[in-house]
Length: 228
Ligand SMILES: [Mg+2]
Image (cartoon, rainbow, N blue to C red):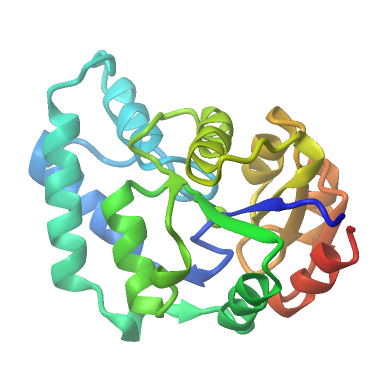
């Protein structure tokens, strides 16, 4: 019998990219909620959760990130600004994603979900712009926990609740573009496929411990289908 498997997808740098735009909108939302003296402490958001970015920013300015009163306003302002200012023209939809998700759906032996640092609302919005939202019924998101690694067990738990199946680590695959995706996969003893659509090289992903690294999304399905 072919085991039923769970495939968890990262969004930014994996299925889509939004060159420059995300950082601009996050910074604008931070200014709006915290004040114009709060600059983001780093340039690259790669692999970080939205909550982690918010927490790092307030910590950088000496504020306690625990239960910070600005977090929920930030989520609202960020979502609103993003939806007002970003449209499909800003988005790169990486080739092969739609076909990959369609082939996993047609195969019938894969359950797909999200494992992303995006807050839920943004994940849905970005995937809707890309025409990929309908493939995803569930996931773990950047407003579920600020530590990305903690999203893995949550995604697994949600998948098991929805499907009634139990997934062992070897029956779970994480598809992502950053070393944090690889670490998140390792944390739940899952397999990982690194995709070099984003800002990280094959070498970086291999060094992080990804056993599979591919250049394009259309190379992902063969890895999954051959894993039987
Ligand atoms: Mg990513």
